[in-house]
Length: 446
Image (cartoon, rainbow, N blue to C red):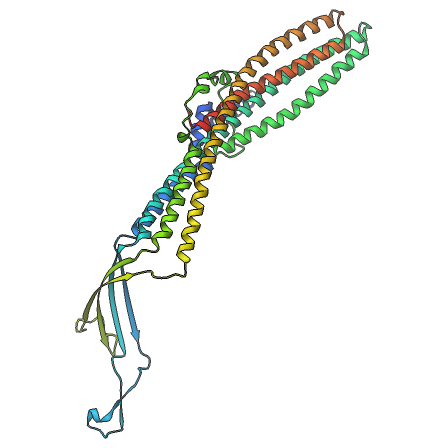
């Protein structure tokens, strides 16, 4: 029996150790770093940059020498017959001689070198590929900022859930103790039934909130796992706590941070959109320019009535050709003109959109700074309110059990305390989230 207990205990320890080894621990910064590498949206944004680089080279390569080769094999199942005047062969005038030209089989191998000499659309294409790469980089930077913000919010929600559950469990334990003591007083005729009922109502409400918050906490863990790029059921441990993080993220210097609009990612995205519209206008105008291409061709041909092309006796006849092709657009029934005008309209729209976005970013920065400053001030206010609510609740609890305070006053003090506790937790989360929002807009990540 003793050996069985030791074996069972060892098995439980190994299972617990295995679960601990497979859970991952993250500080907030570690969570952000991990997400930037493993978040699925962030990884796809990085792939978009690689795809843009390949597309840039794809565009560049169209203007570089292009070599192609071909092998053509022909076998006449029935050769075409031509008629030639018989007098060419000493025959009678007016008569014709049936003649078959060529051999039954032939094979031709050719290689062609082509090179663009001048093409206006190619030059614009190179510029467009570069801008497209910059747009992809902008999108990646924007994605990283949003992923970072999402991780901060998700991390904070998990901590909020943990703190809320812990507080409600302590409140429930205190209420159960008070309810037991009050019930004993009532049974001994020293307290009214209403006092017991008041505590029962409060405890029932706390337990209901506790069950709901426990479920929400589990959902918060799943949301954080998604933000990190993990399976939603992966066990994780958070090494930071909410109060420490909120204090670390109170930075008054951020309220006076540089507001250079050109450094914000949203402005850069709008600016690159305008650049792309400029290039589209250049592209349409370049279509009115002539294009010049050159090519060099060379090959060998073999003929025979049998398939003897692999034999040494086979004769091969070489040929070579050099040429240039000049294409001059002359008249398109005003199609090119209409396309250029449409591109110019889109460019004007992009320029106005850039100006509009600049003004919106200025407003967003001012609003984010205001929200962040309020979050810091509200944190200090809610912290003081919590201290006051705790003292008030303690006094009313003492007065109640000493018989000089009513159960209604105690319930009011308890409700006020629970509200102060919730508001204090929300104030800490607000500091984290509003700082992350301001840093995202300013594109200033510490």
